[in-house]
Image (cartoon, rainbow, N blue to C red; front, side, top):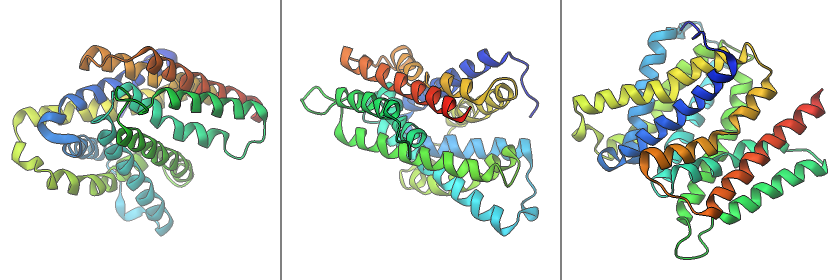
Length: 282
């Protein structure tokens, strides 16, 4: 897939909007397909599109590459279906905010610097604001599922770093999507996804695959060639806020003051962790 010629910073922002807009569209399909069915449609069509674009030669993979790409793809599939199950119970913005805790903890893991404990504390305070402590609080199971999705996101990052040293990124994502589909599709089939198969579902699946995978992946690859990884990561920290705005615009999900404050705290913690980590590595 040829890089889209868009300046780096707008490309990252468009990628974020594409992913979160796709998530909002996906949640709109939950009443018809269910969370597992929608995840199956998204991952399945993403796999088909990426395989068609990159056309990986499966016969050329070594045993080491197979082991890495299978683990990578399965973590991707688990992350997606668990996240969809989470946002079926809690607003999209809160789901993304809680999911971000996984990469944040990964970023500061092993650090003994006081500043990194500050980022953890800010994120913890944010989580406390997204509370099930009263009858108007967020759903507890939804919160736990979003945090679990974040753990799989952290694993996906680690595994993605390993596989990037073994094979081309586009090839890895395309093959990984095969195994992500293997993880997700049984749940979609068990939920009766085939009963709802229609031209509308076909179009929705293609739109989800493009918005959530193909388009943002291309935009991010293009941007990473032009800007430092630290700048890229700081921009990606805006995802919880963009998700909340998409949830408000497309799903009419109203958040309380404390929930918006929680999102702000996690965004600050994520951006701060990226900045201080960058300084340590300079």
